[in-house]
Image (cartoon, rainbow, N blue to C red):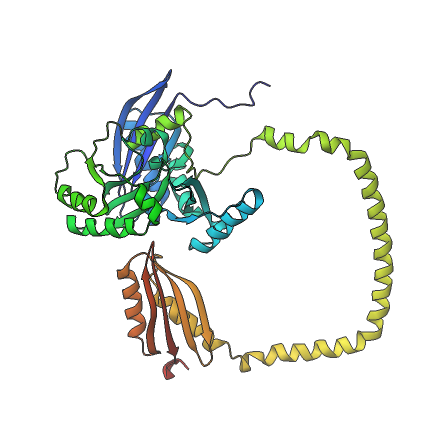
Length: 455
């Protein structure tokens, strides 16, 4: 049938989101190769997701117009720091059991409900034969914000993915069993590759010197299972164009400690070009965060199927019989309920009168107001921008509060804790646990006493 299949465009605008910078490049396919046409970049606000997307989209549209880039189709690569990631070993399962295992692990490891996330995954095997899966997720609201930016810029997203997992990037490496380090505005992005598959991806923030970044790399590599650590052979560093060699000695120290060969690689093509080439040349990237769209033809084919037509006649007859039986049962049930109602009508009237009186006087005896004040007081201690959030809150008698959650940084967690400590209504504040992994995890307890001025 003509017109049901959409042809892939011959050129796309590739967007490389870099925290505080958006780099873009127009790429065109010709036969079995791709060519870069024009490129540029746009400075992004420090807190991208708190700025109106229409404002950023308008700025991007003006920038593209100044370079005479008029196409609408675009693909995007996301930075590691905008994602939640985890890796886990996979038991010997298949089919529905394996899918259930993936869903259970995602619910346990990600800090948000799975329905609020766009999730992608990639399964791989270590050289010793163990099975692993690496999952990455981006919040639905965050991706919706980015889509609004593109919509305001009159762009149509065809893909949201990770260039680290693209075949073009992996094939360009001398050996795809390595640590890869790339500088960013706030630090470095670090990924671990095992057999051309992502095994780890994390953002190393607040790294101000070479020794600090070396320490972070050692800690991150040490979190890998022993079989994956032993498979690593190289430590690749991708410096920005024109960058100096201040990290060369630190990388050498890390490589010596981990038994790796350090190597500084210059990228002949940008991540934006590699991402666009993968898309235009149909090279698969397992980390795709763009929700699949159901076409009109797919909806039509689902409605009109051979199996449904085969059983249409029998189904209609069965439906008529079932409906007739339901109507008969309903009439008998209504008659029985009507007789039961007449027997209890007087008692029900008395109960309704009693309930009305309870509703009238309940506010004078409501014991829940102190609890509401407690929750309001705790919520006011958390930062408004969402750097600290609650995973579990337990209020015990008499007003003992146990709270656990996550924080994006140690500083945000300490500021929130200091607000509680300085409050006159918080007594016996004690930190139960603080653990820094992908995000900082914490747990604390205190006794809440309402001040007399609020009573």
